[in-house]
Image 1 (tube, helix red, strand yellow):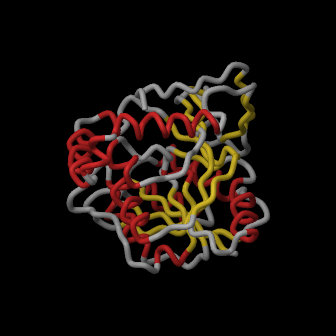
Image 2 (tube, rainbow, N blue to C red; image 1 turned 90 degrees about the vertical axis):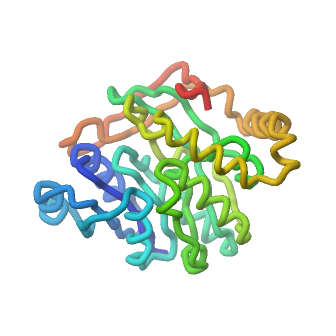
Length: 279
């Protein structure tokens, strides 16, 4: 089983170095790391080509979702996933995902758990995944982070791509909804698979998600909009059953600096479940 990890990049070389290393040290799997860059310049491109095993194409694009659509055309693996520059895979992630796909070969999507960290590498919150449902996404938000989603290649072969014309921030939610409508067999694994970096300039904190969220909500059936509070309660109940509101100490190993040659292990004695954005 071969993995294809897709990263859209634009002038984020420091964070990209960490993401690349978190893919490169995954053990027990064959993996290609495809970087679709939006003309960041020679420093980033030369670094990737001269210092890593990742492949890179640098050319103009119309934003992150357009870049990922371009990267989809380069995928050669049996399983593909999306990892942003400021995200990292945790040790053993791809091997754990591989085992799940091998144990359940008809699975289209494996979903893991996630850790939210700050620029100082401190744990802000832990996030337990719950089953993805169209009605819940359209009336709320994409509650399982994209970096925790791992898709079988046959999903890509359905030809469903990001809507790069309409979306700048919530295109992943729209894309996942359309994939769900095409029929996905999914499995959840209780394993922290990735870290998501909380930054003060995250795109999620701009007005774009609110505008695009209103468009997504309009796509929901009337019954789902009417029952949105109930659906939200049901999702939080599922999260509670998954252990999403309490945890013992959590250890995690990540690349803590741009030029780190190995992972640093951190430990949080009293992890929080509270997302800093209230999600």
